[in-house]
Amino acid sequence: MLCLQCNTNPGWINAVKQNITATIIDHAHAEKKAAQTALNLINTYPEKTDLALELSELIIEEINHFKTVMELLNNRGVKLTKDTGDEYARQLFSNLRKEQPQRFLDHLLVAGIIEARSCERLKILENNIDDSELKKIYHELFPTEANHYRMFIDIAKKYFDKTEVEKRLFELSALECKIIKKLTDKPTMHG
Image 1 (cartoon, rainbow, N blue to C red):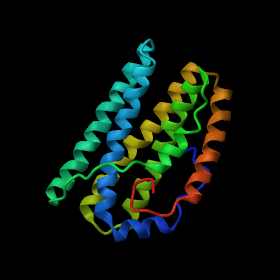
Image 2 (spheres, rainbow, N blue to C red; image 1 turned 90 degrees about the horizontal axis):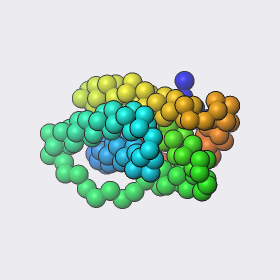
Image 3 (cartoon, one colour; image 1 turned 45 degrees about the vertical axis):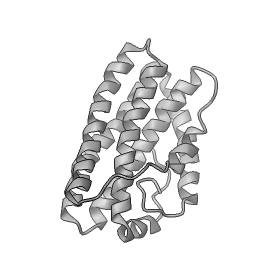
């Protein structure tokens, strides 16, 4: 189902278990940034009305996910801290080609790859943590994140030839795998 070419490093879940609060905070930031990515696409390509309509739904869902995670933090007496950035996403987005329309294709595909990795991470969290409240939230978020992955890939196939999309998705997924393998297992959603 997912385009991922490698699994998360096994040590990641141990880092998360040692600081689940940091992971939840980072998750809130990740949901906010997912909505921002969709807004950026709409702002960059305003003439693509169908893109705006489809991504509007995704933005609403991502903001609702952000709210869910914020409510969880609030109920636990935890404040959201400053977003320190996401090295994983930064490295992935640095691989966008400069020229249009290839940049548009790459932007869609990188957004889809990030959603795919989020799906994998949510499933790992659900299956490996003892906190029943978190397990429930991660279980509920998983199918929506999987739909977001498919949405970005399907949108790409509306604007570009299917063969081109699949070829570039494979290339970017290979780059993503190299990035994942070099990560140092931080207690973040993409760490």
